[in-house]
Picture 1 (cartoon, rainbow, N blue to C red):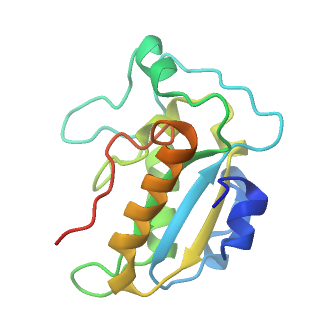
Picture 2: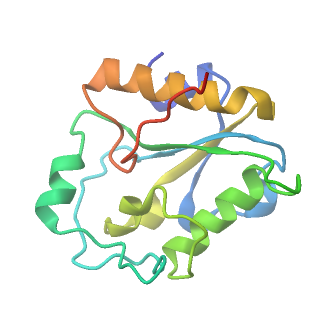
Length: 168
């Protein structure tokens, strides 16, 4: 699989909307995986302080050398995540993407996966894409995408600090 806009489209991803102008009601409610991509010509500029919300009294900001160490120069995909059904079955892609947007606007998150996205200048220009998948396939799909990305680029996407693994 190629981790490009074209490659993700060929793999069934849809959306590809800028985060800053995304109409969240257009995101499907079902479970699935989602990706944050750099638009064509995007150059990383790191903010000193993240726009993301504080999580468990911890500032999500990292120093610039740590951010630069996570950056993958050749990659278009900056983050790969999943959106499960939640314990009450009321979660999914729409709610996960909405919470991700809210997190970037300083609201406190339920977790802080992908937090490095919010330390990029012009993060609102980044694209978000999604792929609906049944809940029982999410863990394996996320782990497989992470593995394939590492095989292609030598490390995880910029904002994925923990590699997903299949349980079993």
